[in-house]
Image 1 (cartoon, one colour):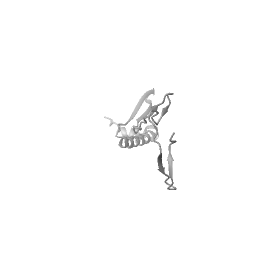
Image 2 (cartoon, rainbow, N blue to C red; image 1 turned 60 degrees about the vertical axis):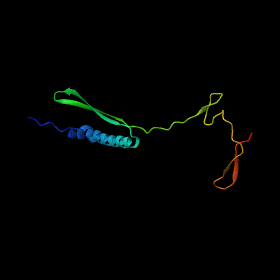
Image 3 (cartoon, rainbow, N blue to C red; image 1 turned 180 degrees about the horizontal axis):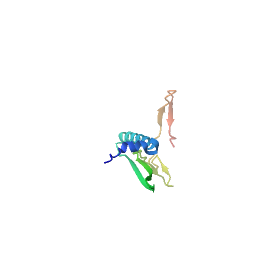
Length: 115
């Protein structure tokens, strides 16, 4: 009875070891992203075996990764009367006589037009 060849050995032979290298790097990439985001990721290897003649087969592989991405922050905006988006509420009045201190010069400057 023949002994079955170990899959790990097949994997290191696949595309001269390139597939094994891609899987190793992909697993590291997915693992890092999972740890940083707290979200699930996947790495998938598909191996296709096609007969091409007596005692020969053609092997193709496909490696797919689902790398989780960090949640991006949202932005809240207002819509003005012309339907433009703005960070400032167009229905809120201005604060007049507001002053700030310039961090470089220490000079007090007025902010806002006071109109």
